[in-house]
Image (cartoon, rainbow, N blue to C red; front, side, top):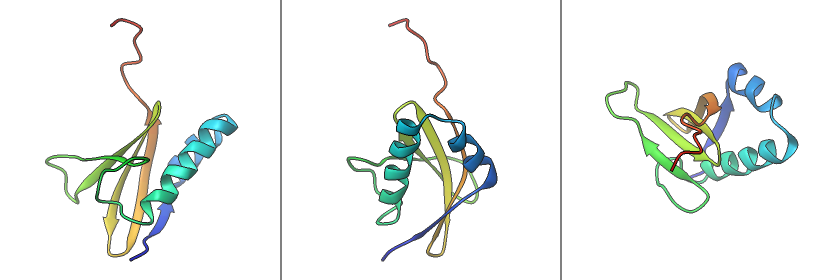
Length: 90
């Protein structure tokens, strides 16, 4: 089953602020969501958020994160943001 992907204005604005390589990488990952937005796999590192209603999912995309929820056969990407904790300390 193929899913439709809808991106919020807030997420689109974030994507426009990125350089071309990061934006292309995010688009490739979003296209992977069309096949199966539930299951983690290579190219789609997906985590289900606990305690959220409706169930929210977070996808890791390099240094960026996309938060989305699923309604029927549509994936709604509600927001995108940079990874927190960008520290050089190891």
